[in-house]
Amino acid sequence: MPITLVLADDHPIVLNGLEALFALEKDFRVVARCSTGDVVVPTVKRFQPDVLLLDIRMPAMDGMEVLRQLHHERLPTRVVLLAASFEEGQILEALHLGVRGLVLKELAPPLLVQCVRQVHAGGQWIEQQTSGLALEALLRREAGVREASGVLTPKEMELARLAGSGLRNKEIARRLGISLGTVKMHLHNVYRKLGIDSRVSLAVYARTKGLL
Image (cartoon, rainbow, N blue to C red; front, side, top):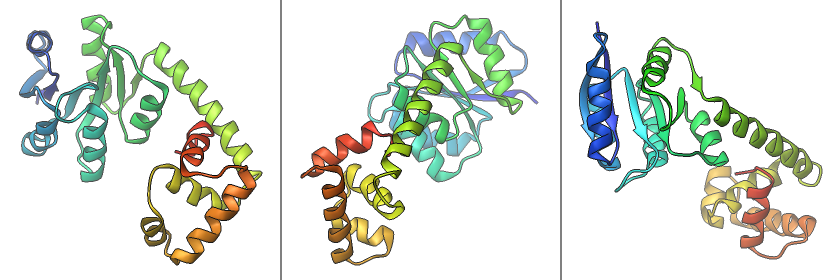
C-alpha cells in the first residue's frame, strides 16, 4: 500500500514541485492538494491521508489554526509542518498539537522524502536548527513557570493563564467551575502579588513567563 499524502501550500509552483517530487517515488500517492487553509481539514477528513504536508502560512486560515482544528477533531493523519522559518512559540505549540515533522523549506528534496517516510513509520523529524530553538524556549518557559509558581498559587496560575489569553471573567468562571466573585477575588490577588494593574500587563507577564 502506498503512503497517501495531502499537500497544502498556497503557491502553485510549490504544490507542483511537491507533487512531482513524490510522484518519482513508487511508495507515495498524492490524493489531494489544498491552496487555502480553510479547505485542509475537510480535505483530510474526506481522504484520510497517512500524512499531511502543511505550509504554516496559508490564506483563509493559517497553518497553526489548521493544526488546532485537526487536533480538536482527533484525526489520525500525521502532520509535517513546512515553513521558511519557525518562531519559538510556533514550535512549542506545534509539538503540543502532535506535529511529527518540522521542516524548513530549504531542506533538500531527498531529505523531505526521507522525513515523510520516517513520520509515516511513527518517528519524528525535527531539524537541528529548529530543535535548538525549541529546547531554548522550553528551558526559558520552565524557568518562568518556576518563578511564577513561587509567587502565585496553582489556582492563581491557572486563572492568570486564562485571563492572560484574553478570556473574560464569565468564561473563566465557567471553565474553572467557580463563581464570578471568586474569579474577581483571585484576579485581585494576582494583580497585587505581581504588582500589575491591568489585563494587558497580565497578558505580557503570562506570555513572558511561559504560562500561555
